[in-house]
Image (cartoon, rainbow, N blue to C red; front, side):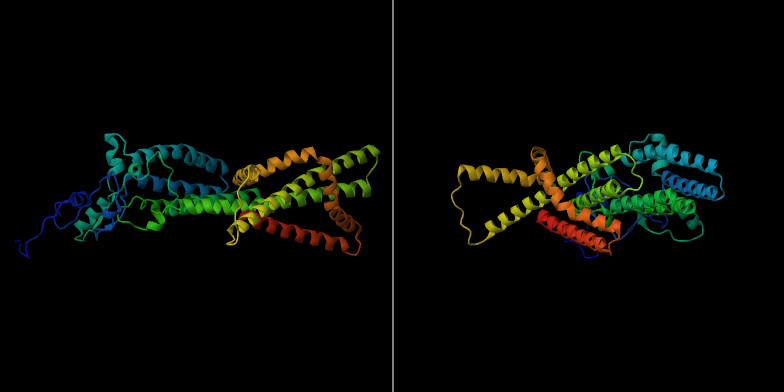
Length: 413
């Protein structure tokens, strides 16, 4: 029987895998780095020792180069030295980026040569801790073991959409668009400020945060471990459905506005000189009406088909619904509806385009009837008839947005 004061030995494989830490030397604890072949959540968060990443010479060189070149470029831009600033941007944006990309790939895959092992594995903080030891200051106790990038994210699978990666991509895209807008508007000072903010401040901060991604202490799992791919797919489908119908309606309104301008030019132009110009504008006006009627009835038919599918589903979901024996025609129709419901947007648009080409005259006539109030409204605005045209145009816009909401609801359900 073992005594209570006698320490117990744990001979399990997991113990040696996670507790392979050398004994303290002269009261100073050391860290251990290993590469796990199969990370297991059971081995995470078992040690009370804190976790911090290594500050290797490669990481320190990358961080210092980014800060130095970015700050130098911003200062030279403020001083008006465009040639030197462009040269630094080319060096930092092309040469050094390619070099650090190659070195970073070697670091993540652990396939660097032997003579570069210190460059990728030595912890520069050991120098700081050695100086502290000479000053009789205690070294903080922490570990720096990291999961291998290859074992955690296999090459054959799609990379995880973690919170850190989504945040990084969103910040880069947002600030990049803001900088581009400022540059196109001639706001050079604002563009330079955003450039320094992104390339120096945010890049350095996000890089330091990213060093904690391969941690083995389960630090910030919502930021580094959770996969948000299902949420992104759902959000993408919702965004596409929300965007499709408003964009289609805006296209119809844009075509209507162009036709109104063309019709005003044809019938009320002061600079009209020849009949040939009038004939050309009449042809353009008729062709525009033809295209507008196409888009209008495409959207209307797509919404009607979605509403039909919705009502059919509601009918079959009723508790009083009794299905009759299906016939061959009903089976064929049901299979066709299932096929079209899978490819609703593409199938309906292609089918309606073909049908419209066959009955173009009827659709053109219907389009003229539907869009005729819009032409009257533009004509009234052009003639300044007591603002009646403005009122009619606003009513038409409200109807268009109501129709958009209705079609979107039918399509989503």
